[in-house]
Image 1 (cartoon, helix red, strand yellow):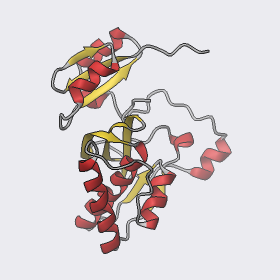
Image 2 (cartoon, helix red, strand yellow):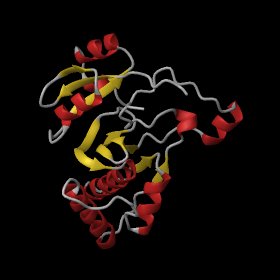
Image 3 (spheres, one colour):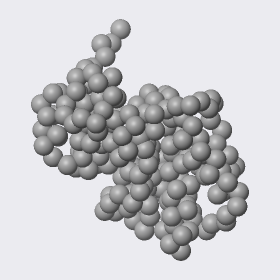
Length: 213
């Protein structure tokens, strides 16, 4: 059986900041802290160095990415459309602490972020991120397209539903209030925004990625 790699957790924003060696210690700092900023690292030194820097320098990066696709495949796929917003979600556990955000695809400037929510799933976060992006683009009368790396979220938006198996409880009450609002928005609004699947194998992780894989 493979040995699970030890991780170290940097918390830039939370009830307490610093480097934590256990996930539960990190979790205690970010639970019920709006706008918490955290990320895992494989070594204590890397986590400590990251703490001295900026959270946004460590997420949504495609450094050292090399596609394994052939030149012919890459040519067929082409390059991303940078007149766009990219969205993504991150969940520490399934269910677990979840958050989602949207960024400018080219500059990676963060346009919106929600969470962390105490109990959610990655699929719910991806769904909410898409609807949030659709509402933002419609409000601004923007012709940008919307990138996601989640086929599940795309199908839920198309069907105007959130087909999650997560049961409602007191922990995720606030999250499901957002889900209900998102479904209501989809049912009562039209939009021209095109939702496009991000080509991870060709371009690397989506720019909105939280970098916690």
